[in-house]
View 1 (cartoon, rainbow, N blue to C red):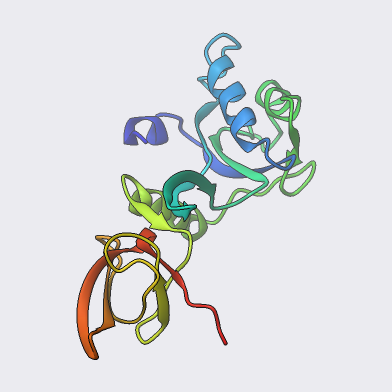
View 2: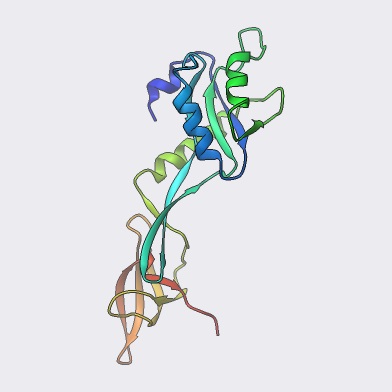
Length: 194
């Protein structure tokens, strides 16, 4: 996200736009694609769909997928109102008539997001950039089952968690002694309760 975009439109604010379920990406792509050809760049600075990359293991294989932070919403940094407080019809209809859009949050008189709200969203996006997050979050002291590598199918207790690197230290009982083993998040799953 470029700072130039965000500050390039005087009077622009962030607005939440509600979309049909699983149409957030299509709405973002549509708005981004037609921004220039529909001459909207003087009204719309950025369309944001906050996501994170999530990893999980199924049948011993590691999978990645993109998870939306706010399903059913995209956020648009735009000049929705003119200097007299009236809605700018050109960008209003451009956004509202996009396939998959339900409407602006706030109906026919949308209010911009508070600065603290959008700052929180932007910080979330920036923090997630370039990182993978496990689909499941673990806690120290939790029992897990190892699903990969030489300790496959053994249970252990989580001693340490390094969320930045996506690693766990798990104590595993080997030959009657507990041994710490370094594992990645995707190499374990919650142990089944008996």
